[in-house]
Length: 114
Length: 114
Image (cartoon, rainbow over all chains, first blue to last red; front, side, top):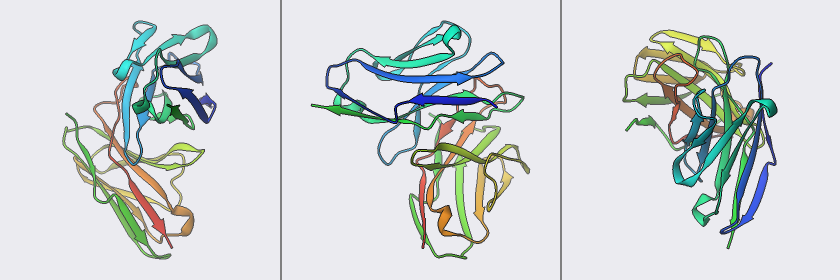
């Protein structure tokens, strides 16, 4: 079965430090991969997505992610954390087949310390 | 901008009550989805619909049903609410059936069943 694994349910960084959130997927088909962000008491918002074009994908708010097929990874990074980045981040993978189903990871809660 | 709205942000119901959660999207999207979100479990798909009156079970359909009579509206029904259905419920919609299509989320309904 296809799955998405996010390493680290909680990540804490200092303001200005590098943000690295890890995501690995399992798939036997070409993947479509997504990162969503959820701010407190809100729904999910798309940060970026990989759709088989450039392997380095740039998203909103200074985030980017690199697709590495050999490592089956799609890690999310941001060079310098801001207090407003504190949120929960979800990696998702297309569930395959002819539908638009997504398989989500369990999420990583990012805390940014002043 | 795509807008997905959900009828309530917070809802408190009693065990055994019939509960309706409503979701409306304004972008003529083909697909609509209902997820539940629980800490440590990420988002799990309950049901989805790819056309009016069409529906498919997701990963956790037990105890739920859905209705899609109009393209823009997708309802989640708890026939007899139970305490283990206390959760955050998120609705989403997307344009087509390709895996690369972005899902747009509503703000969520936090349901408490007493």
